[in-house]
Image (cartoon, rainbow, N blue to C red):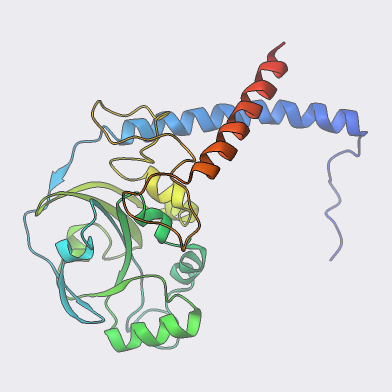
Length: 254
């Protein structure tokens, strides 16, 4: 396939770097604006969930509270896999399937006290078959059995709902849907939609929110131990990296 006829100009390395620096300034401004938006999201009011919801799971009936798996936060993505959806019964919705392919290893979310699950109206046997065929075995996937999708704005269209719990009391904290779902899939996009955010010290969060130094809580996906101290070698390496970034940024301002 040939290139379009109206392509950008071809320039020297120096000119390319100058153009890139101009665009980088705008990208950094966008990042700061996104950080401000997520800070505002952490101050969104919460909605108490008063109804009891029931899901079918791989090992039987589960309540919405059960879906938290004992963690503080929960994200539920409403995926369309059921009779009447294009692709049934071999496939889920093409868009939802693309999204499932993007989902990062949930263990990193779990390390931030957050659980991600998918929910559809297909029976569990069909969900298990689909997960095995498509390589989605790491995603907990439940069957909606009641009005959960209608009550949380995802009966007609896909979307991510985030929840937080205080003991057994559950609160809805945010909804991302439509084109917002395109950006979902990374540990950061999921944490940024939650009430507690990334839980890192640099974030603008309300007083008393859980926060720890950035980078230090990261680990290999097989090596997380709940409440364990950060790997001291990784602390040393990440500290050195942060110092190098600060030195580079300071030099760029001279």
